[in-house]
Amino acid sequence: MTAKSKSTANKAPSAETTSPPKISDQLQKTLDELGQEEAIAMLRMMLLIRRFEERTTEMYQQRKIGGFCHLYNGQEAIAIGTVWAKRKDDYLVTSYRDHGFGLALGLTPDECMAEMFGKSTGCAKGKGGSMHFFSKELNFLGGHGIVGGQIPIGTGAAFRAKYLGTDQVSLTFFGEGAISQGAFHESLNLASIWNLPCIYVIENNKYGMGTDVARVVAIEELFQRANAYSMEGLPMNGMDVFECYRAMKEQISICRQTSRPVLIEAKTYRFRGHSVSDPGKYRSKMELEAYKHADPIVGARLTLSEAGWINEDQFKQMDKEVKAEVIHAVKFAEESPEPTLSELGRHVFYEEEHPAAS
Ligand SMILES: Cc1ncc(C[n+]2csc(CCOP(=O)(O)OP(=O)(O)O)c2C)c(N)n1
Image (cartoon, rainbow, N blue to C red; front, side, top):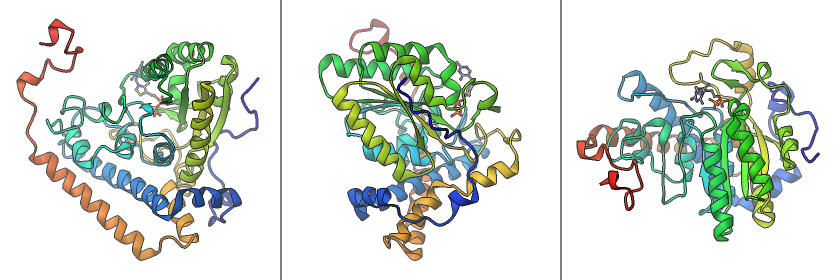
């Protein structure tokens, strides 16, 4: 048995955990390693994602955005902690809840909003929409609409890295709803047998659509599933960006050195419904309020003000700037052209080889 078995089930935070932060030795070490500029950049990126998605909701309600649209609201710390911890050329793949990763990895708000609007200037040329952000340049293998469909893709990227000896790590994210899929089992099993450098992260936000995880998974601590594949498994506080950074940095380094896969369960919570059109009535107001006390943006802001790195005015100025960036992105999306008809058949097959592509 390799998964650590201490009980850390995804329970609503207590008042104790939400009181003003005292900077522990470990947190101080993380802050020292990051430095003021990077720590502030992390907070700024979380805020940008939050403001981007708030505006996205408005645009969706105005029917300027079509299709499905799932927000990352509440889960931002996981993407930011990971992106700051990874090497630029490491692979990353995730589910349809992909806006946070796209922005954190370096897609611009303009190309992300344009993608939502289905415009040709979008990061997938307007053909993917909210669920299918993608960037070959950033080794971002995309958002994926099929639950668990990205797990074999992330595993394949790890296989490629190992086969070619590139020293890259593959970071594969999925919701807790995906861990009962066969693709999860097959991928983790092969990754363990073949010693693939793959980090699997369950973003356990407690609900798969309207279903509480406790109703569908027999064990409470999801990271313990690692035991079945003889790999390391561990929990991570997905509401604390500096803790996500520390844990991911450590695991990425181990994975790169050992080429052993690992399963991480990030305990988190989404503040909004499953998608923009879900009012989320299957959970109590009390539960929601309790988790909102653990808002990762509020937490990071408190930590940085405790460290003396940001004050009220500087935070307000930061907020003003990110809101302006998002307004610019909406204008850019609105003014961008639709994809042309000739684009319809492109990017379906690998173009240099498949006759149908031309
Ligand atoms: C194979 C498959 N089955 C069903 C669906 C419909 N569906 C979309 S999201 C979802 C819930 C997934 O929950 P989870 O994996 O926990 O991710 P979260 O939405 O919480 O991020 C379901 C069942 C789907 N997209 N793909």
